[in-house]
Image (cartoon, rainbow, N blue to C red; front, side, top):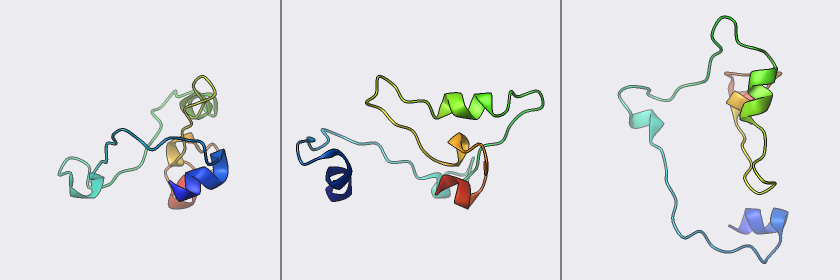
Length: 76
């Protein structure tokens, strides 16, 4: 929260709950990266995944990266 308050200001509230994934322990994924199917509309699809919602919800990560999808540096 301290980092978020540096970015968005001290007035943002504490979360009421959160959900944390454990992909590294999930036997069906063991940590995974996105991939594009044949025929995907690059970069349109990745830009759509990363679009903000109501200027309040923001997405990040390698799935939203046009230049470096499915990579650690794309996630960064």
